Length: 224
Image (cartoon, rainbow, N blue to C red):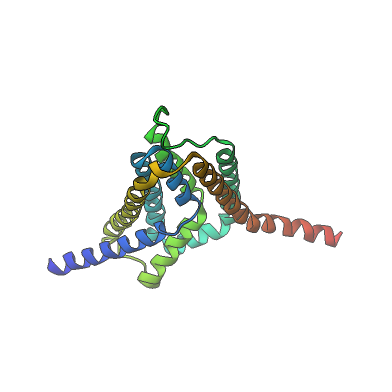
């Protein structure tokens, strides 16, 4: 019994470390969560962060329950996943660039739905195939080719969610401390910066699938 408890605790800690590391990688979604916190406060930032944490846990479950199967499935559909993900990121970045940012000092603004914040980051994170590749790689490094025993996976996933949630809670708390000190001009540049980062990442994601789709066409043209 004690051995099982110690094993589950160790797996929980491993999952927590993995979830924290993946969440702490500052990318376009993190910038979006920061922007949400600056505009509407900690609660909105936490809601957005929890969307990412849930998406991380979903991808972690897929990776943990079948590292080899996931690798094969992704290799066959990776180009289409990246194509869709890149287009979604670019479209959302353009939307952010066109949207007028809200200053934290403007208390007349009516907060948006926290559910919308949650679903927005959940959807954007799920369209990023790099997330599942990160988890699959980390799980393979931790567990080796054997994968995780089925009895350990629930503790692993709980750890992943907890680790990711801790990062987003901490980030929302820290950003919330300074949000009222951010001027409208600074918010405008933060808005533009986050939009540019999301669009840039979307373009980067599109490079590989466009190359994959273009190669057969170029080959056919050369053979004619």
